[in-house]
Image (cartoon, rainbow, N blue to C red; front, side, top):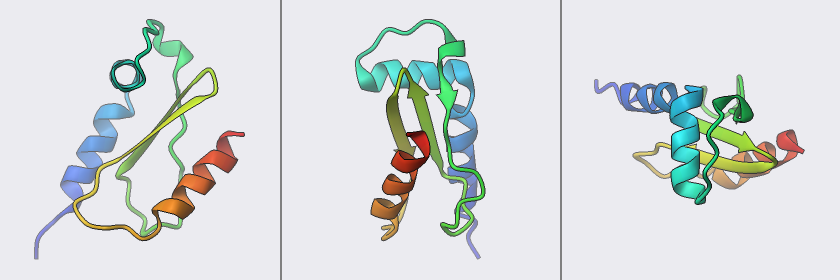
Length: 89
């Protein structure tokens, strides 16, 4: 049996670090924040979505960046987006 989880957890581990997270946030959002303390790791804890840790949510000054590593289609994505939005308000 294949273990598909190693990719997901590596992705989440890499970008859950404040310094790396701020770097990817700046690259994707076109910003130039320099203080990792401004970054909040807003990833949902104990989500009801298949118990996978393959997502990262980064928040700076009410700007939310959601990242997900997926190798297959996930029909729960709209629901996850709504939950992230509601939790960050």
